[in-house]
Amino acid sequence: MADVNETAHAFGRKIIRLISNLERKRRRYINEGLREYGLQGSMFLYLTTLDTHPGSSQDFIAEHLGIDKSNVARTARKLEDNGYILRELSPTDRRQYCMYLTDKGKELLPVIFNRLHSWTEAVAGNLNDEERRTAIDLLERMMDNSIKNID
View 1 (cartoon, rainbow, N blue to C red):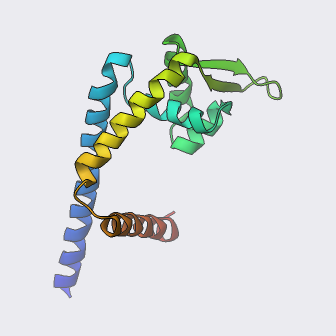
View 2: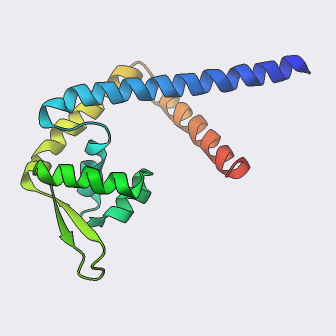
């Protein structure tokens, strides 16, 4: 029985280590490619989210990206200062800001998407479609398990 538990423990350590390392490398790769534009950390995620959800509130961004509301406010202010987004008070809730991409922010989207695409090709370029689907399926199942069994 100890062998099964040791194997499960080793699997848990290895999967977490691999996911963590991949995320750190992705973050570093994205940051290096977007540094010249004054973007760092999750800033690019705000821009890509506003591309698909224009007029989003800071609360929506916080929930959608899983980021603390105070961090969203600080980052949104930086993006606004850099000219990438425009924040306007919501007409329906004066406590909320709606955020929109500026022309400068829209012009940066192809750079962001190209960097993200090059990351994907660097780490998964040698995987065929079935292997990619399997990897996503397994990670989604593990995420579902965590929600069912832990949350």
